[in-house]
Image (tube, rainbow, N blue to C red; front, side, top):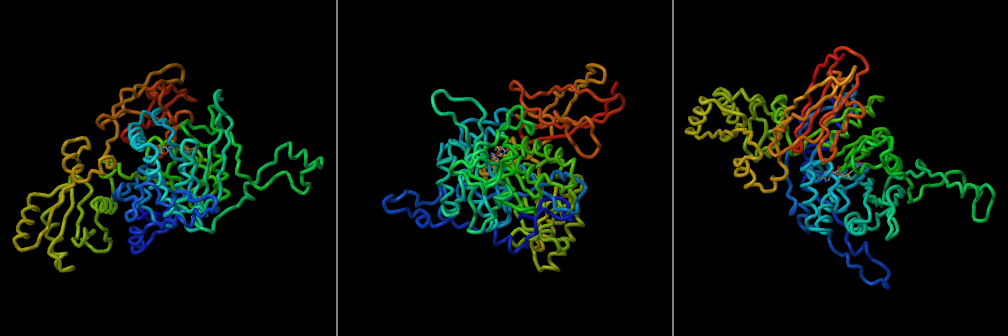
Length: 598
Ligand SMILES: C[S@@+](CC[C@H](N)C(=O)[O-])C[C@H]1O[C@@H](n2cnc3c(N)ncnc32)[C@H](O)[C@@H]1O
């Protein structure tokens, strides 16, 4: 498995990536990526003089790198869904909801073959306003508060993590445009080394409006860096067709043309690929969606079948969709819940036709309460111990983990089963007899009065069993602010417990076999939050939600989400339909409805 912190579901069926042993994991936690010695990489001919780049990447502290400005926050992953295609023997891929910096910090070094990244471009625009998703609005405006240096610092912290994650033979493709590309190139040279710069790819997309007062801007740039000297490159897999003009010259033997060359040539660094416009077949409606052809070129040329491809700014999921199609494994991440569900849907539609590995949807930093309560005992223990910043210990009977040297016992996932007197005595006996210890902690939703009494009595005998009560504190409450945020200010924007929305559906018959479905009465149970997206599955199979084409991404329409839809069924009779509703705090729920269609 790629991650240090294990997700909390059954792991028996194999995982996306090899499980690393504890020792390696421990080392990795402290492992830093070495930055190239700048003077070596910027030795230019003397006539150029000095280029003022002999510094660390912006925002990088010589000792702590980016942990000084972005402290490390250890939180567990929560598997909220395993999207299954019936091949549980294959290692599942991963789709992670969370801030990529923290997600990446939980993944092991040297584990990924290829990274494509398409970050926000420092364009000053907020694409995500279209969704009204406060999550994103907040994070983007924060990022750019410090202008270009703020943006570069934010990006550099992520680039450095990506370098750590890449295998020694791995590559990274960084997609940008004129807003920031020149500044980012300088930072990339500092992080990856000037000598590892391979190409500046020009993506010429042609479409869009024309400028009257300057040359029209019609290209993006993609910087390709390898991590080291060795790299994967197969230009022969992405040969380019020569233009008609060149072919004509070749055919007629005009001066300058070489007859021996065929219809195709080795690829160049200028790619002419149409952008996704409103007519594009592959368009899923996610703003800034990139064409599959672009990703196909990158993935085919810089990775092999079975390799691991990652995209930590995955948006609508173009990278995963192409990686999947080309037989690569993938791991992707996005900070927007909408991106996660749009991508989930896109892959489901892709995979309906193919036998392929499952994928896990995991959360980092935003946890669904009902899911925690539903966890199996083992998963719950792991989750709680990680959230408590402890260390798991799976083979020690009643000791489930340790916090430093103190043994920990975790109670039952059910909120109705408090720790009993008997459990306290057993745990106390166990730690004394097996470990010769006189101190332990029990973590649970509750403790019976008898359990508390017996703990008091034990204390009198110099055996300290402390109780830690798990509390569900609403994130917006004063209590939360006082107890948690005051101690850990960095948690403020990252740690959230969300509740699913309450879905109310009003169904009206519009015509023969045609119905209107209205969810405008639905409410978010997370304070200050509103409903921002709705998806429909009008042929729900009782197991897996697969949105009906055209009903998978009902984003904003005239500044408001489109909460009413009309659907015409093929035939009359009893139908099971499902509706997935999301709010802007990450709360989400599926409601299943029976409709007697006439
Ligand atoms: C330009 S879009 C990517 C579009 C994508 N390439 C596609 O083809 O659909 C950038 C994405 O980065 C996500 N993002 C921004 N900051 C992030 C962060 N800190 N962690 C994870 N994702 C982030 C945004 O939510 C957005 O979906």
